[in-house]
Image (cartoon, rainbow, N blue to C red; front, side, top):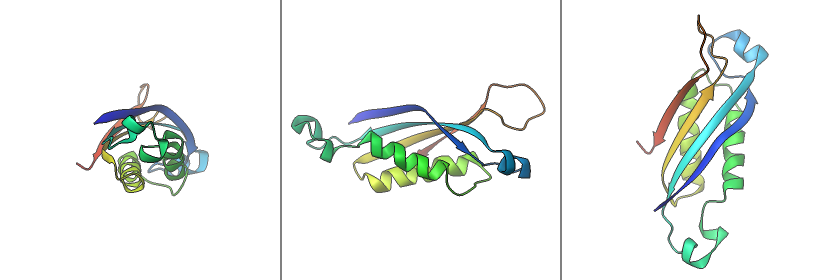
Length: 119
C-alpha cells in the first residue's frame, strides 16, 4: 500500500445551514489522504494503473462546487465515496473539509471535519 495526499484543494461554494451561507458563499478547503493498493502500478511506472491525482482533483471539485449541502460532513463523505468508486484500487479515503468562515459566535481559524470511507 502507498498513500497519495492532496492538501488544501480550494474551492468557492455555497454550503451551510443558513440562507446567508448559500447567498454569499465562501471558500472551502479539502485534504484527501488516499491509501492505494499499488498492484503493478509502481513496478510498471504506469499512470493508467494508479490514481491520477489530476482526475481525483476534478472529482473533488465537482462535488464541492456542486449541490448545496448543509453539513460539511456530508460533503466529506460524498467525496470519499466518489473517489473510491472512481478508483477501486483506493482501499481507504480519508477526506477533510475545512470551512474558515463558519458562522459561530466567536473567533476561530476554521472548522474542519474528517471522514474516512469505508469506515
